[in-house]
Amino acid sequence: MDDDPQMQPVDPAMVKYLRALVTALTATMIIGFIIIVALFVTRFAGGADVTLPVSVTLPDGTVPAAFTQGGNWYAVVTASDDILIFDRATGQLRQTIRIEN
Image (cartoon, rainbow, N blue to C red; front, side, top):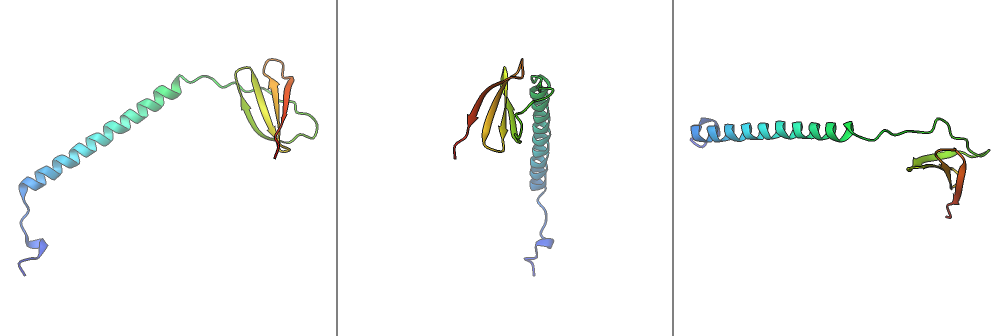
């Protein structure tokens, strides 16, 4: 009956060691969280403004499925597997690309 774990004495040195480990882990987690928040703030605060066209005029019967944009163009992917590339300044259709299956 002397093997009962509840009756064994606690080593004070082990308690101090565990307390130091828990304190170090807590400090590491707090510092890591602060660093992650700082990285989010610095990365997203200075991001370039995304300007979307006010309106996009698509050909009749065209159903849009996706939109993307580049420096001086934007593109609409249609449900019929076409990519329509428009000029950003004029809004005119530059190019049509057919996606082959």
